[in-house]
Image 1 (cartoon, rainbow, N blue to C red):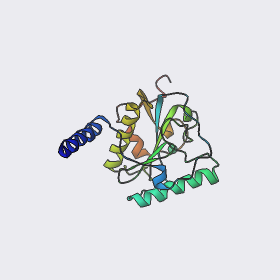
Image 2 (cartoon, rainbow, N blue to C red; image 1 turned 180 degrees about the horizontal axis):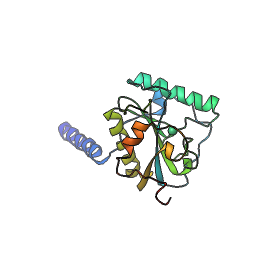
Image 3 (cartoon, protein in one colour; image 1 turned 135 degrees about the vertical axis):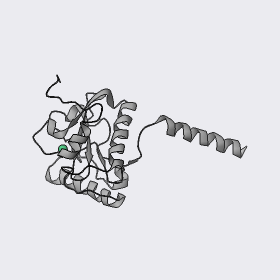
Image 4 (cartoon, rainbow, N blue to C red; image 1 turned 120 degrees about the vertical axis):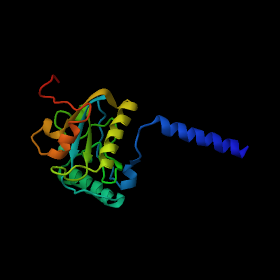
Amino acid sequence: MLRVVQTALGLLLCTQLATSVCPDTVSRQDWGAAPPVSRQNLTSLPAPYVVIHHTYIPAFCNSTGACEVAMRGMQSYHQQTQHWSDIGYNFCVGGTGEVYEGRGWDVVGTHAPNYNDRSTGICFIGDFRTELPTPEMLAAAKSLIACGVERGSVSADYKLLGHSQVRSTECPGTALLNEIKTWPQWDALNSTST
Ligand SMILES: [Zn+2]
């Protein structure tokens, strides 16, 4: 009987793993986030845009502990200095390919003017002007976007943008921008209707 139950549980777990593309995510609680001052849900759901960023500062982090410090540092800067309600991004990706929950799904971020209320903002922790994120980071971001589509938070025909396409900034860095230009749903934006 016990064996039957174990087998059934094993099948259940396998089924769950096989049917979700969502990456494991380090929760706000896990990285020691402060509470948001306020939260506003996206009114455009599923989000029609995904906007990619790099942090530039903080620098690349290659351990969970270092990335958690980076997340806390960003949140503190965004809340205390910028007076935003929370860390600006919806999610961040660290050097080991771990995904860190920022504001999370379906919440308006502070990362891209005119797009905050209709996009999911994903940041890569580090400076990617000349160097690419690790393959693990790129794979994690792709899984995260696919997860957003799967759960109905990101439109299936979303447009992928780099921050510099919607604002004058170096973000997400030339190397990373050139990388995402090769992803299937990257959109040139200026040459197409919005
Ligand atoms: Zn940015």
